[in-house]
Image 1 (cartoon, rainbow, N blue to C red):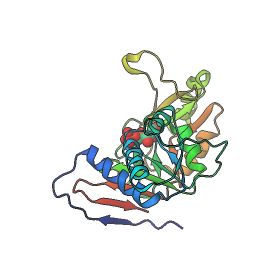
Image 2 (cartoon, helix red, strand yellow):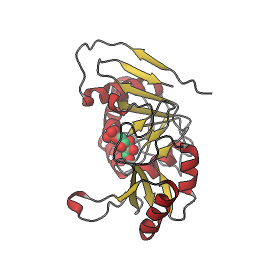
Image 3 (cartoon, helix red, strand yellow):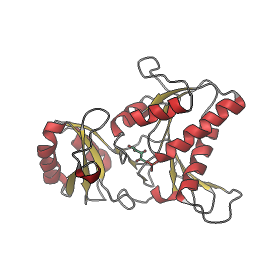
Length: 249
Ligand code: 5RP
């Protein structure tokens, strides 16, 4: 069973860390502690994962580390290729040693909101095929209750032709507001790597039983996946303002 404790490692930094440096700190620590030679690694999506891949690439060059990487998005695939890391996929490698990914929010029970970048479906699939899901984030992502920090809403990936009735059904069952995610300058809906749309669900009840909510959402025809990652993460590493890394397990 996973114990719910927070440990702190102190480090050399004494001034307040920027969000970017906090991401980098968390990413490097997680890669150093969780990646071993020969590992098959799921590579998450988003800006924090960029630092994890940079650290992986450094270790491949410096320590002759051998790894193979499974991307969770087109963006992650490009990142892996850019750093000359070996690519594989779930058809060839069906069980991964570790998946390293970011999050939009992490609560005190290690439940997550993910999908701010629209990659939730493949992120959840790859995480589900990994022995452990390690989350890397800056201090702004750490919260007591889901919804305390991330105000853009819980992302829900849906089949395009069903987005309107799905919005109604969720609103009727749980309340809140559902926005169809639009591309910049409202050029049309955001289309995911899997050809689907995303609904961002805001103003929900923060005291919900998230496991039940997730199961109910997934039972609505046309809902492909949700950005609720419940009981999936093994550990989260947060780069903190004071230069320490908080580990939540
Ligand atoms: C993408 C995700 C990302 O992991 C999440 O949005 C965090 O991204 P960032 O590291 O840029 O803050 O779920 O779908």
